[in-house]
Length: 403
Ligand code: PLP
Image (cartoon, rainbow, N blue to C red; front, side, top):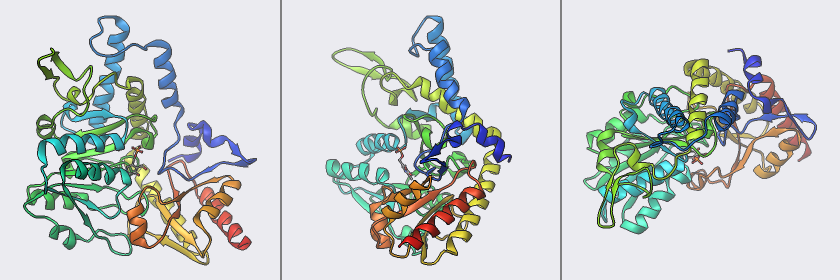
């Protein structure tokens, strides 16, 4: 991959902060956007914009075609069987809330159980807790080893006749652990239980094939995969989506409405109430085409090597503690240095132009498991370079000497 050339596609990477070149290492929070994605947004607003579906006029039909073509692009990108299985949402969070609401209503009663893992993002915990309040369900948690690996035997032991769903992250946004979701899904299926995979941190970094994984549901966010904010995806096997009731009511999701009775639209529209973010879906498809052209395998290999290099260099810093040390982890490194507070380290790195994230990373139960309050997190993209890793290491050394 020609990183110098790739970086030219991302205008923001050329800017300075506090008079220093920006070193953007907060890609797990959101990724920067290539010019083609921003152009797709402005061009559609300037030359196509009209509300989608049901419109007889030219612009509406053109906007509808772009929107539905985006659904096909997403389908291809994650290798879903049918576009009926691709529901557009606002992001991973809304995808999971949709499922908690619809699956909870159709498939769960008091005393039924779900399994989540220790390393889940709050967005794969709190919707289930809200369901627990409404329905009296039970949440069981897969424990983890100190290096950040979910324990397979403990996982297996959590299943019983009340287990209804497993909800697990493909890649941890804190530890970088790539969970063995394929095996975990096979285990769940052996117990007759479907699985939701939170793919927020996997889809941007590796080729995902929902059929090969045999995932029942798979959620991800557009903005983490170089697309716009405010658009995301819930993949669901057709047999499941067919069974589930709508999430929200309104336009688009109905077939016929009378005051006595309403019938619902076919898949996937049953789950898409109201005007969709059709500009966003087209821009998301543009982003997926962009990363596909780079090649997901090449992206994964490059980021893997960069993370390996960063880990090696960071480990050489005195007092360095890295959280999440499983082999073949994703491109996220969470760490603490000596007794420097993560917030102080992040703030001082920021003054050097280095953008990292600090805090609990929306994973407070994981922080509790690790016995810490928070970490500094550097997360990498294919547009990051070894020089930027060197800048991070030099920055940390500089801060360390101040303390
Ligand atoms: N799940 C994981 C693993 C994440 O890292 C994130 C965001 O950081 C989310 C879910 C929530 O994504 P969003 O805020 O885009 O809905």
